[in-house]
Amino acid sequence: MSRHDGGVSRRAFLGGTLGGIAAGALVGFVGADSAQGSAPVAGGTDPTLQYPFYGQAHPAGVATPPQRHCLFMTFDLTTTDASALQSLLARWSAAFDVLMAGHELGTADPDRPHAVPTDTGEATDLGPNGLTLTLGLGPGVFDDRFGLAARKPAKFDHLPALPSDQLQDALTGGDLSIQACADDPQVAFHAVRDLSRLARGVAVTRWTVMGFGRASAGQGQTTPRNLLGFKDGTRNIRSDADLGQFVWHDGQDQAWMKGGTYQVARKIHMHVENWDTDRIEDQERVFGRDKRSGAPLTGTGEFDTPDFAKTDASGARVIDPQAHVALAAHENNGGLKILRRSYNFTDGMDETGQIDAGLLFLAYMKDPAQFVTLQTRLGSSDALNEYISHVGSGVFAVPPTPERGHFIGEALFQ
Ligand SMILES: C=CC1=C(C)c2cc3[nH]c(cc4nc(cc5[nH]c(cc1n2)c(C)c5CCC(=O)O)C(CCC(=O)O)=C4C)c(C)c3C=C
Ligand SMILES: [Fe+2]
Image (cartoon, rainbow, N blue to C red; front, side):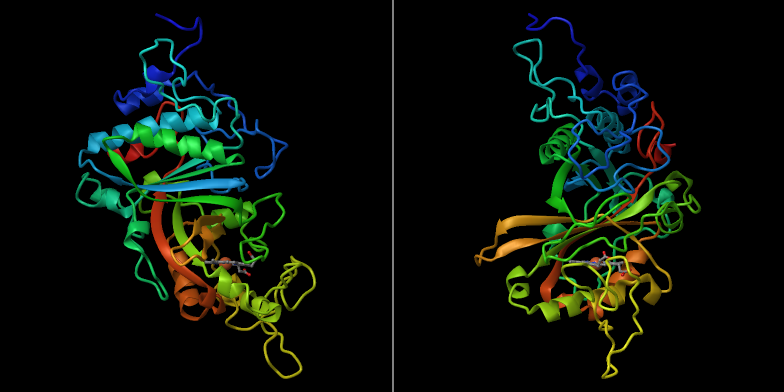
């Protein structure tokens, strides 16, 4: 018996049929013209802000101005069946399109009283809120389980052990990652929750971080602050030229990655109680920047270019050579840049009663070696190391966005 009249259910398209069919069948639901909101920039308060999924030059959630919240989740595949992986990627692709448009996945309120809702319902009526969904494939996808070893990009592998690493196994690795960012945390949560439901029997959650308060800036955005109180993202990549040079994969070596990128995720714990007892002069030395204005210690304005050679009356460098920005700056790393897209996080209190909080460091680059080079340097000598511990880690290949009717990573299986 029907409890409603009219209305079209999207459930049938997401119910677990072969994913390729599911992806194609969704055409027409969201509409090919699910246009990108123009005026508002993510990180604002417009619930109708919507980004398109299909047919974009690059995956959403990378150069997209960072939204206010981010739920990052990694998964381990429990199947060794390549067609089951293919089907999951197809189901997720179709679902990405529906969720980013702000729709339910199927229905939260089925017509038939004995039917189980296909959407969990907590984002109904909230709007898309600038939701972007970004899928990553871990190096394990290219091991001997799925017959994809020949498709593994030469530059792509598990990250090596890096200086100062304190990684926990339970917070490290993963075959797949989903980065769900939105200006409403409930929209991001809902997306990951319902995507996890679609993965049942194929993949299980490995580690997850709920990020709040963006700690990076994109085009058109003011610079936010991290949980140590400093402006974070001042010298982030913003221009299309830098994105082309440092972030987007050119398809050489593996054509299926053209237009995609690599994602590095680090869960970085901050020892905030120690930091909070440090005097301001030292806090500013650690970063090489003024806490209130964000200006480099050699300048007066936030966007002034740091002068790493400048010395004071005693001959000492004004910006400590071991300051975070001195070690990370492109001027001191052969021109190397990465796109940072980090978020603050808290897990409440730890077992000793201290605040458990830090930075969900997310970064994008065309070669994971860019991160390895920077973190090798930072992990060895960064003055910030006294106040942080890298406890979680993952590296993922982010394939380009498919055209409508296709799914993420489809080229891998051809
Ligand atoms: C390996 C790369 C990086 C890690 C890991 C990292 C951790 C980390 N960073 C901050 C806070 C700030 N970082 C800032 C600048 C900055 N950081 C990196 C790289 C990593 N940071 C780069 C490449 C840069 C740009 C350097 C430059 O060109 O000057 C800043 C300054 C403001 C800014 O430009 O964004 C802050 C503040 C924390 C707290 C942290 C780990 C918890
Ligand atoms: Fe940094």
